Image (cartoon, rainbow, N blue to C red; front, side):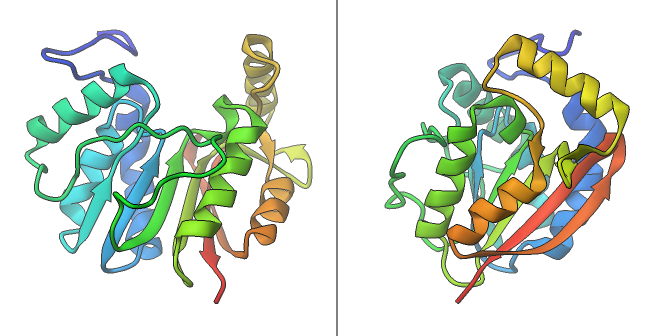
Length: 211
């Protein structure tokens, strides 16, 4: 099976998810609130959210993705994983749009975006931060995961090489400078609480919405 081969039904199977889901889960156990609903932006195949859900029995989960094939995969993974009670059907949501509708996301307490910011335009990051600041309550959690520059410097040569390959695919993509992300987050009333160094030169980045 290749990185993007469909498995039976409409599920997509990404090998990277199996490699990083455990280490991300370890961070989420400390980062996420005890109750409420977690909105995942750019859920992709749905493997992450359906893997995490059973470990947080008091949380509900709302996956989202603008790609219809991804949403079909997410809903197939929901059924295969037996988490339909806590993981809601995927919704169509584009991070870059001006205003998200939060009406379908009751009791929202956290938002997470895994491997999104570097494979989307900067406008998607700004849209994520702007809308998260608008719909999360005080002390709501924003969790980001992926490669970042720190002090505008790549933390590994492999990240620099990856950045070049991303920009070759799309000039609007690329590994972001964490300081720039934190600066924009602060404008939306978020405080950077913690960064965690992860395998493969990635970072977990945890923000809290200020009161």
